[in-house]
Image: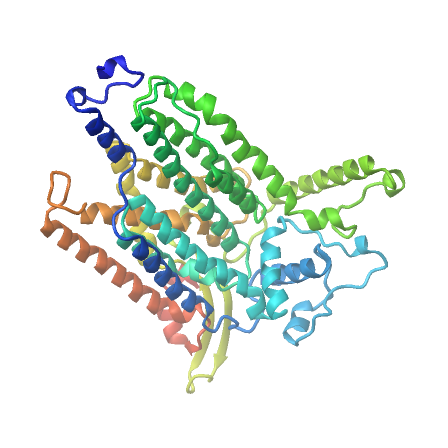
Length: 543
């Protein structure tokens, strides 16, 4: 049977005379490139890199022994959630009471609803912080524990994700190492702020979608190899990884609403991947097939699952009468489940509207606020903690600082890599370059709207969801520099691979040196004031 008589489009002229098995093999190699390296090292390498990053994050995690920056909100909210399921109002000077070892920091009220605290972020991130406090207590180590855990796990996820995208264990470990050594990721992994949890769930969602992409293509190729005939292609069966991605996206929104942009963008990306997969095996009607067989499941994964998951994270608010805005008419709803549920949901919607209004009007100034265009160049970091201590280090003026800033070698290298990825995508339409550019843009460009239209107060650490995609951009460029293995028509010459590997290794070494140089001002180490000032890359903007 000629290729043009089949339900598939012709791939190229040379394919017509190929044997069916050869043609099927070429389709599999093109649609599903094989994974290089052993399965064992595919896990051991990323685990070793994650262990290295975890050691960096957990060593002396309770230092500085202080309430750092916005920990003043989230540490107390997390502790309140694990005790009362909702956030409650604290007493005056609660931070001082906590550092003195007290836990009775919440106001006493006649009724629970009068103690409700007005909070402007969903509860999941604070629940995660509270989980650490439930284990280790209301202290710096306890409220930073969960951040260190998810920071470490994100290194493992990125290493495995990069391995899957590049089909190289070495490049996967390279990506994980860069994330382990990024200063902003490091600082947020050692502080009880919400943004590290937001980044974690976004990264997890993207990783799930890449696994789902591979599995969907594997099923399509298997169907093709079995000789089934249909111009639309098969249904692909259960897709648990796409459902998991939808749940992770909901969990990101349950930390901060900024996860919504990624939820929409990743849904579009996954559907486009379905179109591309069906087109790649040569179906005559790939788009109709995707709409018929993939879109209904995509709707469930990216609409129904996220809605249910997001609502479940508010269980504490719905389960008690002590949450802010729980003001339904008890006299009407008492004994009537329908009115009870309706009024509860109505109150919850009203609360969400109040929070939306708050964010839209958040325009107060702050000494460390920055604009989105400044973020890629690290022009204005955030001082999470600073304390001067005259004479504390050998008679000199001394400083302790925690500066929320990325590792410059990584961030400036990422700028070059992203430009290279644009050229690569325009030239080749490689899905990996497109996915990384798309995800980076989604994490960055929406903030320009808030900066220009609403003049909103913003900080560098809002860029943390962009960091994994910056590192993926560097990793993809590293793969291009080294070239594919082998001395075939598609392989790179040995000399090129040696030179490319040396260049990538030199870059990794520069990152390590840069991180080591910054380490004292990322961890609150006591150093002479002159050494602290020497580490300020842009003197006027970093201080």
